[in-house]
Image (cartoon, rainbow, N blue to C red; front, side, top):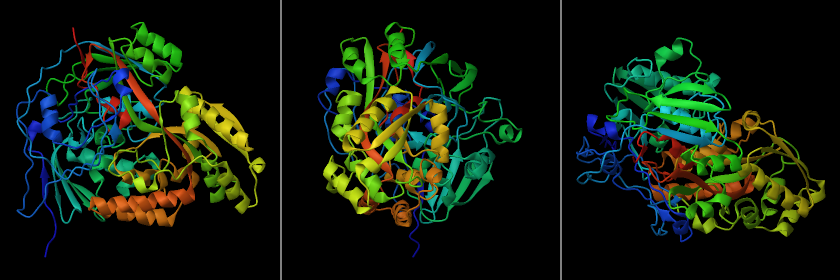
Length: 596
C-alpha cells in the first residue's frame, strides 16, 4: 500500500506578502518580570494580516488520506512583546501542521519613506549569500536576497519565492512553484533555472557554502518548467524547509553568476533592497527596490549601515540620534534604556557563547581533557562578569530551555566541579598545571568579556591560558581552517530544529567539524535517524542521545545563553526579534517604517 503523503502549501499569488513580519518591542521593566514563548500557530494567515492583506490562503491536500504540514519546527523560549506588556513563560511544541487560517485582520499600512540609520557592531566582511561571515552580515545578505521559503513572526515556515509546494512520494519529493513576476536587481527574471543553479553552487565544494552538507541529501533537482522545481531526496529529510529558510539558502541569478560576477564583492538579489554605495569597515547603503515583488514593500527609502565596533561609541550614536536602530546593545545599557520611554528593545536568549576546542591540538585530542575544561567553568560567574547577571547557563547543549526539543532529564550535566575536572585529567596522566592553552579571542566585548572570565577561572584551577586577540575577519578565517587550539565564539542556531547539530558536529559540518576534522560515527548515525524520523516524540529522544554523546566528545566548552538585544527609537515600527533565529531577524527589514 502506498503510504506517501501529498501535501500542498499555499494558494498562489496571495502569498506574495508572505515575508511580512510584525515588530514587537519590550521594555526592560517587563523583561525583568519573565520571558514569553512565541509558539507555532496559523503562520500564513497571521502573516498576511500583518502585511495588511485582506484574504488568507487555505492549505489544501491532493489526497483524502494526506496530512497537511509545513515542515515548520519548534519555537524556542523567547522574550518579546509590546512595550509595557507583562510576559509569561511556557514550553512550546513543534507545530502539528498548517492551522486552518481564520479571517485576516485589517491592520494599518505603514508609511512609506525615511532612512533606517543602523549601527553595526562589526563589518559584514563580504557579500557571498552562501557563506557565513557572522551575525552582522545577515542584515545585508537577507535584505538583498530572498529564500524559497521564510519565517513568519512566530518562527513558522511560510512561502516566499516559492508561492506553494507539494510534498510527495513518502516525503522524498518536493515540488516548488515559484512566484511570477519576480526579477533580480539587474532586471532579469527569476526562473526555476536560477534555483537549480543556486543548489549547484551551494553543493560545489569550491564555494565553501555553509549548507553544502545539508543539501548533500538532494538526489536530484530539476527545472520541470520555468516556474517549477522538483527536488528528489535520497531519503526523507524532515527539516528540508527549515534549511531552505535559513540565512544561507538565498536564491541567486544563474546568468549573473555565469557572467563571472564575484558574489563576494557584488550583490544581485531579488530582495527588497539593492546594494548602493559602500566603504568596507565604514558604511554600507541599501536602497529601496522599487520593483520588489511584494506589493507596497519595502517602506523605507534606504538603510544606511554604519560600522561602530566600540560599544560606548555605538550607544552614544544611538542616544544622540545619529542612528535610529542599533544591534548588540551592551548589557550595561539595558536598564538605562528602560528609563527612556522613547526607546524600544528587542530581546532574545537565542545566542550562545562557547569556546571551540580543536581535538587535533594536544592536549585537547583527549576527550577527558575537553570534558575537564567544561567542569572547570563556573557558568554563573561568567554570566555575572560578562553580562551583569543577565544570561542563562548552558548545562546541556545548544537547544535552549523552553523549547519542545529541550531534554529536561539531561539538565544540569555541565556543572562547576573542579574536583571532577581534576579527576578527569588524572585519568589521562595530567594535572591542571600541565595545560598550556592558547586562546584566540575576537576584539569585541561580547566575546572578549566572556573569554576573560573563562581565562580567569581556568587559571584559578591551575591551567595556563594565553589570550591572543585578533580582529573578526582573521578569527572567521581561522575558525574555518581549524587554525586554533581554543577559540572564543558566539553563535546562534542556524534554524530552530535540533537538526542544526549537523552543521556543527555532523561529519564535514561547515560550522565546526570541517575545520577541525571532528568525526564521531555515533553522532552521524543519530543525526541521520533524526532527520528522517517524522514522529516528533521519537525525534526528541534521538537528539537526547546526540547530546549524551556530546557529553563524551565535549567539542566545545558550553558556557551561556547571552542576552541578544537590538534597540530602536519609538517611532520605528515593523521589526521583530523572531523566535529561533535571533539576530538573523535583521534579515527582515522590508516591513520597517517610521511614524511621522
